[in-house]
Image 1 (cartoon, rainbow, N blue to C red):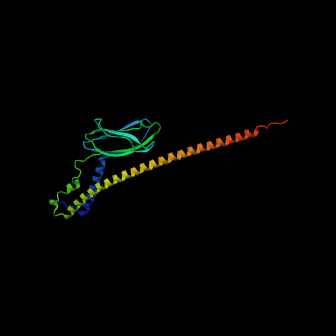
Image 2: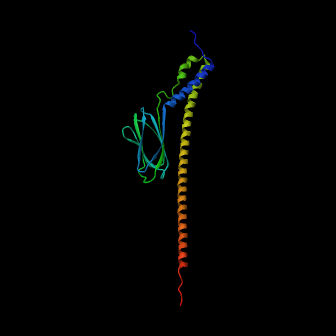
Amino acid sequence: MKAMHKSPLELIVLSLLGLMGSTMLMSTFVSATTVTYKMAPHERACFYTEAKTKGEKVAFYFAVQSGGQFDIDFEVIDPRQVVLLKGSAERQGDYVFSAREPGEFTVCFSNTMSTFSDKTIDFDVTSEHELPGFGTKSKLAEALGPIDSLKKDNVTISIRESVEKLEVRSNTLLKTINWISRNQREMRTSEHRNLAIVHKIGSRIFWFAIGSSCVMVSMSIAQVFAIQTFFSKGGRTRV
């Protein structure tokens, strides 16, 4: 039986399809949840995320967008009700930890320190499954067979090595995109805080101007009445 040899063009197409499939497969194993929540004074709010496997990495990020001094209390509790992370009067945080066991993790925020201020929080909880075969050879490379059996087919060997290099570069690209996304998120948080400060200063200037105008009008009215009273008094008549 004669072995079927594919043309270099077909192998290139297969390699690209395999690379796209591996990238899509990696993306399905990452689940992210981004939530923007507005907390009332004296409120405590809890949110939940699930780790499906032991050793799964969980990334937790939060930032106070507006309200008060831009601070909040938080804590992260594991399925055994053990506090993993805890902070008081924090403006933002970025943490990564591995789940010791599968189960439901609780993320709680507390605004009990505020009496009047509402606070807007932007937080992100990302669960990433550690693949057992991560870092191993791709299915396309396995389908092409071992290198020893392909010594006579230099094109196939070259295609296989290119696929492995592309997979490494795609992993690096995904990490770079994630890093850029985090930086953009921090810049957006800084922008929201600056806008909140500008609005607060503008509100103070507005009410200060209103108060100053009221004081000036009141003083003007008082002066008019004082002068009118002074000149309306009749002088003494001599006989």
